[in-house]
Amino acid sequence: MQDTGHILFNNFGCGSEKRELLDKQISSGERSFRDVSEEMWGSLNIPFEDGFDLMKGALEIDKDFKAFHDFCLNNNIPFNVISAGLKPVLKRALDHFIGAEAAANIDIVANDATISADGRWQPVWRHDSELGHDKAKSIQTYREGAALESEDGTIPLIIFIGDGVSDLPAAREADVLFARRGLRLEEYCQEHNIAYTPFDSFADIQREVIRVAHIDEEKTKGEGLPATFNPRANMWRRVSSKTAVPRALVAATPNDERMFVWPEHFTEQTPANPDTAVAAH
Image (cartoon, rainbow, N blue to C red; front, side, top):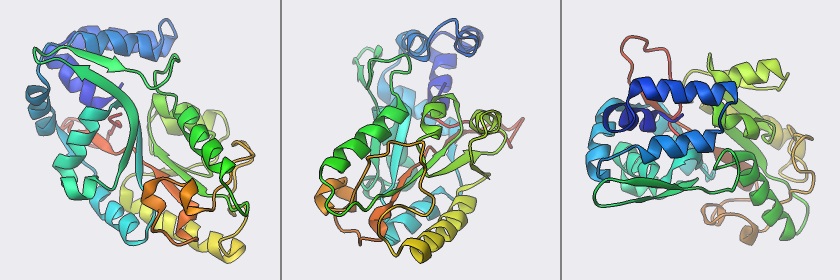
């Protein structure tokens, strides 16, 4: 469950004890992620602005996140957030931490929400599934739509950055997968022999992205399959024309169009255990 939600649920919703019980019901398979999330968000009784004031004081951004985002912007690499959380919360958090102008360059693929003036929260789920937002399906939808408009068979390099339970379905869709060290996504990759690169900060990711892009360019010259193409993924995904990709790629060069980044990036401040970071979806 997302950290942003935890902060709200503990203080203005079901409370920490009930939340922990509901989290266990997800882990045990007794109830679905969507079912439990619906109950947690529905337990809230706080207006959005008041809730966000609390969250922004309890959240911190990875210290290297802004530099990595700037790196992507400077190199015309599309940068997106794919999340199991609520778009209004994520948008406000990005605006707060990196500024509205920079955040406007980030597409957010997440669940929506209706939040009443008296503080009632209702998720509007992106997919009719047990997850509410199936990240694998979102990636597949992008690929399938792009394939219909492909002109020369050039395929984008898909990079996914994650850490938690909701990232598990998407793990098999990436060409290059980053999993935050010591958290559930890394465990899942180890359990299922999925290739991944562990990371502790976005500085680690930036160094590896530079290395991967260099190898890919040397081997492919920006054409055809990426050097690290993942055969598990949808085999007919194809992108090349500027009209086949999200608006953020319109100004990109053909080589830059091969990189598509989907990061999750916020961590909750936990002084008692500062090395633990859980993505806020």
